[in-house]
Length: 355
Image (cartoon, rainbow, N blue to C red; front, side, top):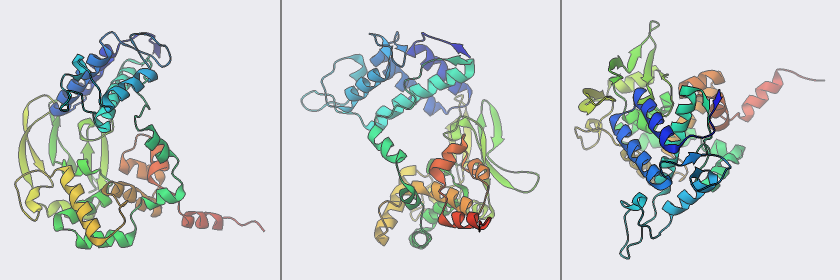
């Protein structure tokens, strides 16, 4: 791998976004990330170079990222081009940006650098990688003990209460999440077919053995590779009883395509011929949970962890759990999505006895 000592942020952002476009990013994603890249360059400058430790006027290191975070997360007075479009209060001061907005900008830059490293086999500094404005929260997550991690898994009794009290569409979405391990956004954006790089393909397909799968390209998920997710009989029954809608949208190359969505608001209590927004299902889930008086830390996002844990408890090999959840590294599955129970330990010690 060739070591590159000096490379500018402008170069890696331009090349990284080009690689992402080639891999099939949605047009809307391309536009949003292009805007984020322009804002980063307005703040750091086109001549800014990447580094971990070296300091200087045009060097981006961890110290520079802290200054970037402080600049946009606090109320301040700034007339530079990078703050022209920031909302201002009555006194003319810039209002602080949301932490999620700042984090997204940093993540886009970090991802572009990683794309460049993988594509061109070069070794360049990536001060954005691993940097989190919410460092305190990140440390709390990494130090969660065994009990905390187990509490994130849905309890069977709570799950049954939620399913019984939920409207039909919400119930189907929860069941689909549990049966597939798919993310909320992946479920509401699931289509029967799509197009990437000018090639049409089926997203829901059956193999020669009669097994059903969902195909994920880069634009359909968080992973940077093409992956698959298996569908069991329960998941297929949920798909078949939905009322589908067709929406005319732009593909990754700006050409119109008719996407038929699996889930739609036609199945809601108040039917509408529209797609489901991720926020809608989150709100519905929270309302049902509060109505039943179930613990506040039972979140919809933990359906993915619950799905992985159920597979693991059913003695499915860890590699198969990793494949179903589509993690690039097995360590992710092992550290965050499955937790050995005392039953596993009890069965393990029965396999040998020392007398």
